[in-house]
Amino acid sequence: MMPTKLWCLLILCVLLPSSYGHTDFFTSIGHMTDLINTEKDLVTSLKDYIRAEESKLEQIKKWAEKLDKLTDTATKDPEGFLGHPVNAFKLMKRLNTEWSELENLVLKDMSDGFISNMTIQRQYFPNDEDQTGAAKALLRLQDTYNLDTDTISRGNLPGVKHKTFLTAEDCFELGKIAYTEADYYHTELWMEQALKQLDDGEVSSSINKVSILDYLSYAVYQQGDLDKAVMLTKRLLELEPDHQRANGNMKYFEYIISKEKEKEANKSVVQSDEETAAMVKTQKKRPKDYLPERHKYEMLCRGEGLKMTPRRQKKLFCRYSDGNRNPRYILGPVKQEDEWDRPRIVRFLEIISDDEIETVKELAKPRLRRATISNPITGVLETAHYRISKSAWLSGYEHPVIARINTRIQDLTGLDVSTAEELQVANYGVGGQYEPHFDFGRKDEPDAFKELGTGNRIATWLFYMSDVAAGGATVFPEVGASVWPQKGTAVFWYNLFPSGEGDYSTRHAACPVLVGNKWVSNKWIHERGQEFRRPCTLSELD
Image (cartoon, rainbow, N blue to C red; front, side):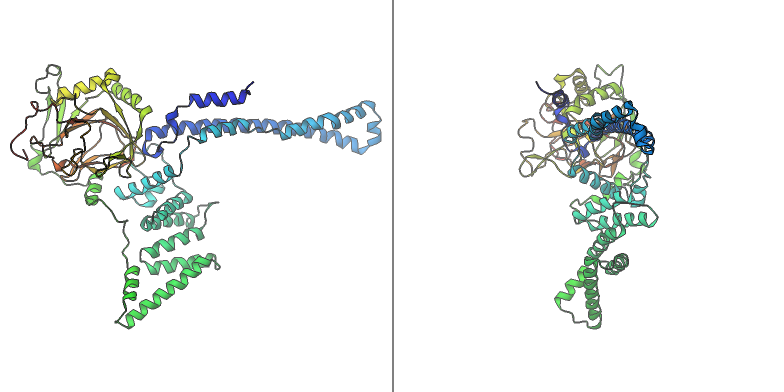
């Protein structure tokens, strides 16, 4: 017969959903909430173990106290004590059986339940990739929103409900992760923060100033600040004079300094000296970036973008829309407002109810997978560091709410959604973002949607299914537009001109979520079926 414990383990394994295996937790706050419940369960199990150990120790303590009194009496007059036949019998009984029982109690392992639970749950824990991903998210938020390390360390972020702080050890780990990426700019910032917190009196049992100074001095040197590197290395050697690497570095720094002095004394310097000087005088800056509009993009995320002129603003209106006399909305039109003029971006207010949102989230959550992008060269779907979210696809035939949402989009846009892609639901992770991109396929991507056979993405409809405490805007760097999340609303824009040419001003991005949890869903509407709904024009850009 199978042991009871093994049966319990098998039942637990069956009941735990397979989708809860490791799936890039850091890319979805929605999935990370499962980890909170996991940790709560482990804490409960740990407390049960502590109570069991305390109960065991209490039994041992009572036994020891009882025998302490007994042996005190017996040792004062052993012969007289044993002269009583009952005492003699009980001594034999204690040493023959009761001490063995006590030994078994002492040896009894009370941790079985906790260890079993830990073993089951461990396979669903985040891994090193998750920790690194969450750390990089903090660095990304630091850069995007111009936050200094002290602000982040103290947890002074806008809109936070549960304030928390980083220890010196946490700051050190952030610096180490940046260091492993050869990102010496962020290594310096976070190692300095860790050092500052230790200097301010914070006590740490796992890191010390020597370790921090070791990383910090090298990061500073790699950025070309030789004087500061020397100063930090001297401080390290004051704390640990025999530090082998620091002593070696100091000799090398002195050699570089002497070469610099020689250069100043003699203007005719050989090529190797020029290379050395160039290395030493490298300017401190963020790591080399692949995104040309990074500066503009981040400004828009902070709400510092270009402001529309008053003349253009006067042309933006709010209105009640009936979907071009759609029968469903003639008596009950919906609120609509203009967000931008070129490209035209409109927002529909109160367009999806809280109940519908919850239904969509419930349907999507078990299917959430790391969001992918289509490789422009191979066409293969792959994950990318510039898209930090999880997504799921929902079809109209699987639930009436999804069908109703699809119908609503068709009624209000006047476009045929029968050739559109399924409703994509996305939940963003720690610092979740989607850097600037186009929704439509460009001319250098002729096969972007070939398999669908429905043409290019003519338009995008985007539902905001949550409010976001800070960050998370949808921005259009080409034109300077910022659209902020507002639960229950949706924004709509055309990706193609009526001629079928792509509108490159629709290049957009989802800014990193600074504080909060961002849920969105979108519908990509395709060209096929729109021939008479949005007729083609002869002018390329009309």
